[in-house]
Image (cartoon, rainbow, N blue to C red; front, side, top):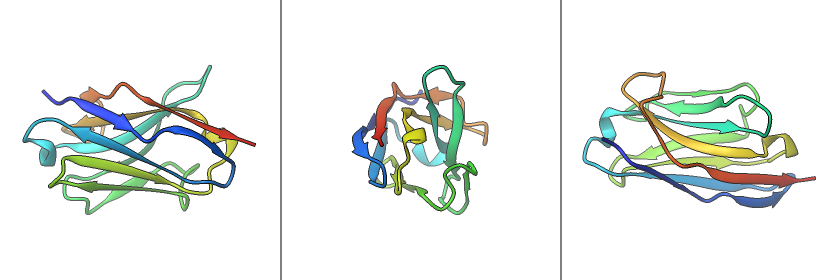
Length: 118
């Protein structure tokens, strides 16, 4: 069992930056692929990025490539999402997720709101 707690969301102007953090409980963090998803009002949840167990590989949605960076610190059981050059269309609830496979859908955090004003 893994519990995930996100932090770092908030209100930012377009062009600004935010850093999301997700702290995981348990001693098996390194065994999970970690990811970030988001869901905007009236839209389906979409994958933003995910990162492999050692941090050696990562995936990004086309909409965030070059602007967002996912990273993890296995010693701290934490995964991060650095978001730069934010756009109003990035406004959503952002969820941290953990999974045994790259589906990254075994465990979910409660979500943190990110709002980007124009």
